[in-house]
Length: 283
Length: 178
Image (cartoon, rainbow over all chains, first blue to last red; front, top):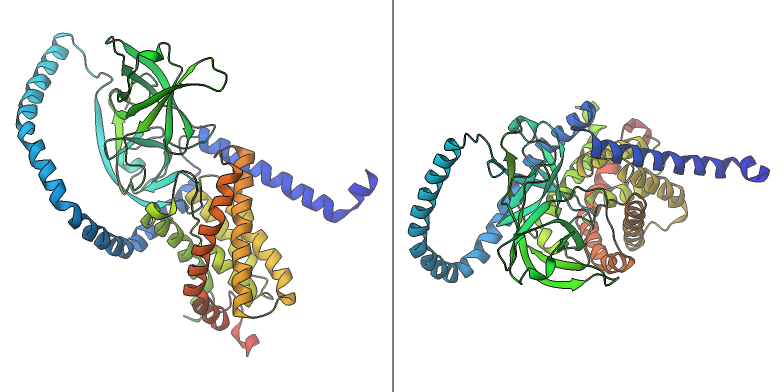
């Protein structure tokens, strides 16, 4: 032991490793617990976000052009599909507005101000992505100035793709729903069972791009294809945001409980424009 | 203008770091897959080449530390990944440079090994702090695609870094180099 502590090089390396581990644990804790980062970090992040948008502009121009060409090839099929959808749209629209008006009347009759389904949307562009192999972090060009707060859900495509984990003045970080981060918050969700009852649970991650609906009381009644929505119970997300659809139900490794696999509905592969969901009644 | 010239390497490294994130986003369909992924690090290649071309400059390590801090804050929101990996990589390469052959192809091999070093470091840090759960299989599957990207970045940026570091070494009085 004396020899070990007598060797200055080994001791220095040991101290450096300890310092690195301390720095990591303290800063991860700060990121998870603080509402916003320290002023110096916010300043750095915002400056980098501005530069990033400038650098992004020509890249977007080139990649956008390439995307447009590939989209042109699919345009005809898409057009046929959309024509079919349009025929149903007018009827759905009329029905929706009637239901909305009825909903408003019922809410005012019950003197309800804000319910779990009330929310506003802030549209944002993704300006950067963590460049390492495994990180599930996106950086968007909207921050606290646009009213964004930590833990707000983020949607792209048809469903939820993640939540805000850090907010700066003009940018924010989004952690994808498929993140395997142990400390990440989970979405509380619900789905309609075959008997018409609501089944509640939370979303966990099985593997990359594979979600699971867990802590379910009566899981066997969820059919394949059943849509899973946020329940609004977690306090951060409004009710009714689409998470995905049930693909299959299996037993866990101990054979004790069911694991309901969920295919994410959001565009996780190529999110370039996202919507941040601001739940009403919190401000 | 003369003062600014001393900072050219720093500015280039800063833009390389921004470019990493922008290109990772632009090519996310190609780079990210459920079982494997590809790292896009202009910064790592830049740091390798700075260490190989300008190993006697003592100012570089502080620049690289600052870039690491900025990258950690911007891309992760916590510190200890690039803040440590970048200066450590530079320090090791700086010590080894005098023993390494000064050929183009050998420098490519050094860059590929450096890419692997940073990948393995990130992998271990994730395993320790638990912000990502990654299997060894995913790490192994990611090595080859990452090397392909590293080689492409190396071929694109080699001449740029060689000229920049040769003409404008970071915070050094250029008269000393004449």
